[in-house]
Length: 246
Picture 1 (cartoon, rainbow, N blue to C red):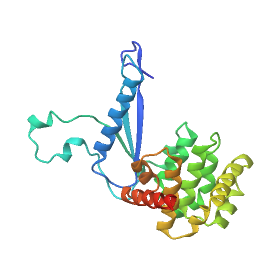
Picture 2 (cartoon, helix red, strand yellow):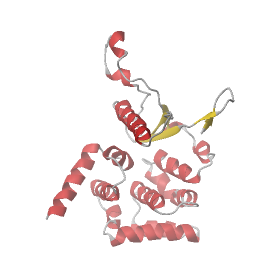
Picture 3 (cartoon, one colour):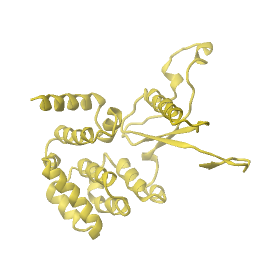
Picture 4 (cartoon, one colour):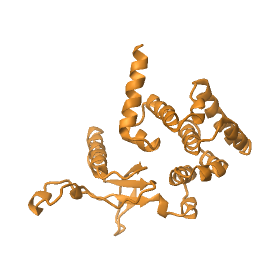
């Protein structure tokens, strides 16, 4: 809920957060789909008044990527036709431009840990040396599925061996150490912890498999989270479906 500029009342606002690990000029199409799906959901909920949805795009890739709107996908289109295109803005934030100090100044600790891990997703040395810090911040008041995904993501991106992960985990506060170890033991029990020691593609395969099994993410979200292409996610899904049929 946000107060109006004139101070007369307030308005409900929904935030739609998307993140990308690589440039994608078709992002406005994807975000637009999310926006209208959100409004459709509000209608199905029987709301008398729709609330605006504000899209926020976090980018944490290594390549440069500028803000890109939907109309730029239609080259040399006459102004008369541009009027028929859906027009919307989104808040664009390149995490690479934000300092760690600015990120750590945020109030939500889990958000801080998530943004730090995304910003440094391509810096294995940073993730390894700051693994304990990220876990301490992110898991301080978070348990369950969200906490597990943060642990899996950091282990995967840092490419920590089981021995190194256990060594770093010993430095954590007791309650947080228990969460990290329980997640690791769960992966180990499912035969997925070994993926952290395998080749890059196999590691990605294991992470994508976990996210597909959760059944809570779209192909695009999984691709962003695991820093792979959507085609790779589809190939993993097809491979898993084949295994189920055997």
